[in-house]
Length: 461
Image (cartoon, rainbow, N blue to C red; front, side, top):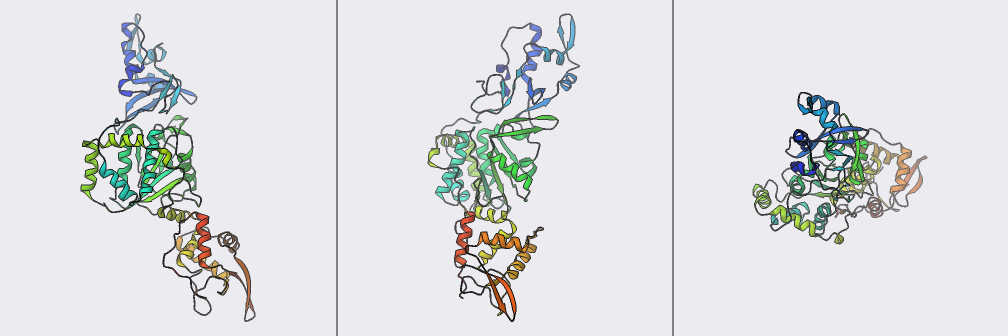
């Protein structure tokens, strides 16, 4: 197995073979370039430094490479030849079969993008950062803190194994959402990417993910884009990804990306009723805009060995004590599920939260009731209530009354179809179960942990 490429010490990676003194410029080229198969083509890969100061790679065609070095020459026998042409044909040229991202090591002859840790595990303190994770990020919940710490620990202990879950931190400005990813990402700075535009998370050109272990989408938001939803879910769970650069064939690489989303928006992620991918936490504002508090965190990291101690504890954490596949059932997740519901489900959820089946009043000026002792509610009344709700929510594609009935039969336990007659006028009605029965059934469907108002009482018949 080949060792990870060290771009600053590339001489250790080139061939150590005797060659004529005149080959010195070719060895220097080997320190900067290599030839690698990308898709169906050979490309020259350059080991360079990006605008952010991090080592990166750039591709160019062999034609562009020849043009770039067409004005530099090297003596071959009695003739001066273009340096680019000679290097491409040189027996000692640095050559790779392909590109991979393999923290566990890559087969010989492959370009491994894994760079390793930025710090060594060791003594130090990160007391304030731990307090931030427990008190603010997890709102004092020790069980939730252990799950979050385990999520980061699995990343460094088993980087080649994806957990299949993403971490979402939602909170106001200045509460310390972003600093969490920045600090953990600094343990492996070459494999941490911070983005602040949705297209960088789910867009086509994604070369920034080729060697990414932790991708933080800062102030990311979800706008209900179904096409992007599949890309986001694939990024979280798929074992491989197609990495696409402009003017370069896409290449298939191991997908080791963990997604951390930080946002102050209400609707952040598309959380379905059986959601198993998104762990959503609301960051408390106990330390909001507290410059001294967050300054103490950075002082620990920069001057008191905080990063080394954090990496040490992450590597030592017993992963068998936490089930990372079982996401925490938080109130923040329930809100994401509600925001992601289809229109009829969202309307019915709001009715259950309000405690009344419709906002319109009955013929006696009273609220419509629940249970077998309340008058059956006309189907037209419920449909009109749903339509008004859709208009308020801005839903463009409203369902029909027939579809509403079909969905209600799934959402409401023991829903009964009734016909009533008043003043020779027959009406088709629904007889609803009790409010408690409806709420329990709906909560079971969506995996909600009692999201209902605590002091709400059912209307008496």
